[in-house]
Image (cartoon, rainbow, N blue to C red):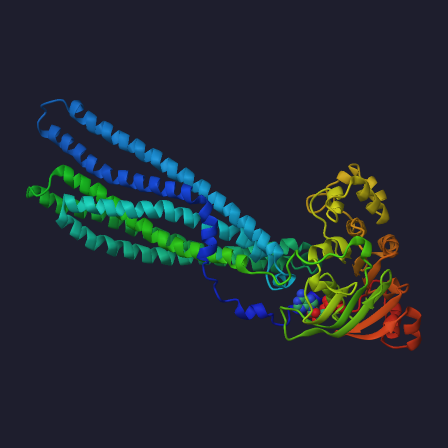
Length: 612
Ligand code: ADP
């Protein structure tokens, strides 16, 4: 309920969002270090392959010389003369092939390993972040860092090592061969090629920008379809089909136009680059031919020159594409590594545990003030004081947005109070081990239970990983769930969640209760646990909750006041403060806010909720 209002107020993160993170070289180095040997070998192999590539044009030139010789005088045996050179070339081709195979295999292995390590560590880092961190981030963006960004970074890394090294080495080697073959031709080539490659890169950058825009437009169109299909019931209920179709059609049209523009751009680019490259060959043949005619160059050398100059052009073009890729790879890498350096304020583990035998389950809030980290200037709890005596049920009621769920969140230590303390058996939660607190002391049951896509058995066992089957059955019985589980053909092995059997709200809630009860928690938080259920399910779930509440310290947050009548104490909250406190009859007698709430609810149809 609170979330709807959150959207309206600016969150802190929005202001600082545009800043692009910087690439963290030291984190990257940590991932790279274990693979240095493989990386070194890959680099050596790539260099070797490039050097072999430099040799090939020279040998091809020699081959052409031999062919040329046999075109005018047919003396001697061509096969004899050509064989050794042919064999030499064949050997070089093979060596080049093997080296290429070697470094590509090594690089792909290396890239995949590093990507896996990065993903694993990033996932761990994300899972450990404070709940406040997730308040300001969209899940989709976080997942994109794990998937698309890691992928982009990995491809760029691999490309830089394979293409980058090869292109640089080949370019350098071929330039040396060129200048040995013909310094004059090389000078001319060196003036023309960079200009052409520069122009090509410029056009290429424009095309990439266009391609990005086209991609974005496609995702925008997909987003429209996704939203409409995902919310098809709402679309149907409002008879919004024609609007949605039109909306999708408009976005598609825009995307179509952009893609067509991109297609035209690519066509122009291809056409122009074909003309340019062919003209280069023609030019080289012309100028080289003049040199050959003037006896300054042999025909074979001209052939070598041609092949080598093509290699230089290809390498330069590769490097210019690579440059763009490096920029993209670095920014993807920066996004990937950004959250690895964020240390959560509330660690998952560490701190004191109270021995089981001494644990009472008394909770107290002392002068607690609290604002959400995402909205620092907006106090949600103001000087809040409350005691939850061991084994007693305390209910929090009041209008929506009053801060009830926030009290539960502080007890779970999802957040630390801005001021004041929350204590368990007199000890500040900040000194207690959070995993122990959440894993063994507190059972939390919320309005919308989340089940994971696995068997019922595993879902219940999530509450206590080392629980025996018997413990699972006992917890299910306590939660009124055993009977309906046994009515499924596969019983406790029934798969639930997104990919499994669809359960009713009440059934899901009872599984969630079993999951919370299996750890035998001393403290139970029920955050509107029955408010999403219809009357009949509510009765069964409430029965399970009543049974589960006995002997435990229970904090109930409730909309429907009828469910909290039996509580030992009812606390009425409004705007982050306690307005009234007492038992049902005391509060009714007082005739204050609680009595008014009860009156308004009895007048309202069942299921109506108080939203302010
Ligand atoms: P209740 O449970 O009584 O309905 P909540 O504790 O959910 O009230 O909310 C109290 C206030 O805190 C509301 O104004 C709500 O907008 C705000 N709030 C709740 N959750 C968050 C959050 N994660 N980030 C920022 N503000 C929040």
